[in-house]
Image (cartoon, rainbow, N blue to C red; front, side):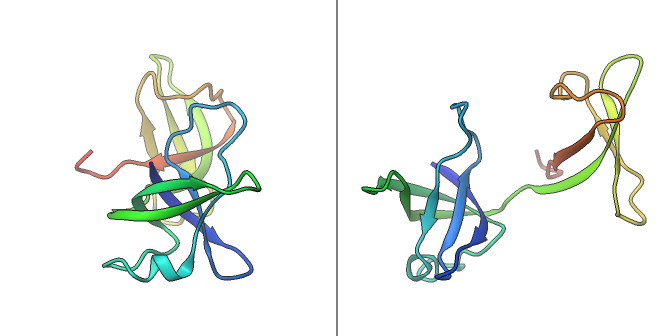
Length: 127
């Protein structure tokens, strides 16, 4: 599974989330032990994206074992969605000075309506 590291827990282990989740109940609890994260080159940390193998634990959570570091996770921006008449839209970032905003192509609105507060993932220039 390809995962993003989204945070840390009390013990210093990394909390991960799959980049896509087909289920409707949110993402499962995935932990990457800090000892395993430091063995990769480069070391995996919050904001990293990696390919990992999952093993289900007795408590219903998963433990990840890294296979390959892929890079950084997509950057997320909080903003206000504004619809275009021709479809698609525009997101004006909240709290980002100097950023003029982001165009949202027709079909990528994700159900957002005019004036909604939304999270967007900024795609890298290379796709």
